[in-house]
Image 1 (tube, rainbow, N blue to C red):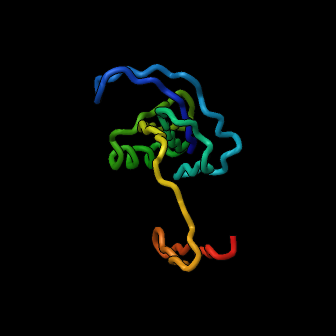
Image 2 (cartoon, rainbow, N blue to C red):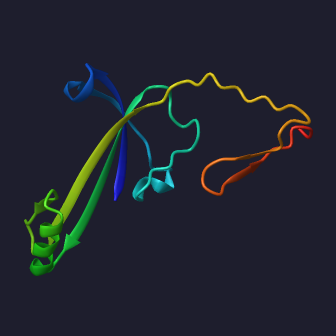
Image 3 (cartoon, rainbow, N blue to C red):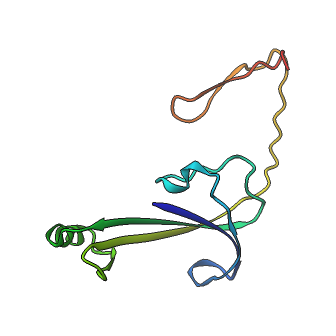
Length: 129
């Protein structure tokens, strides 16, 4: 499993938009670049448009097992140049990083606790800072 991330320039809208790759984003220091979910450090991307590409690959040496796998996952590509069979799939998505008008202001005596996400609490102590 690997992630690749590109800064892109899109011309047009929707599926017919043309893409020009401006640069590749270095993910060598991002631990999640070889896992199912890509988690980027905050403020690590500039305000721009990006293309994320996820590649999943499985190497199978048993032809019978491969036949069953392809019946279950018919959209996968297959490379049979060796005695082992390499099955891979690639998915991509586009996203934009945009500036936010939100500004956090902490006021003494205000709410001191917020909840965000599933069972994730963030405690705030505005009187201390």
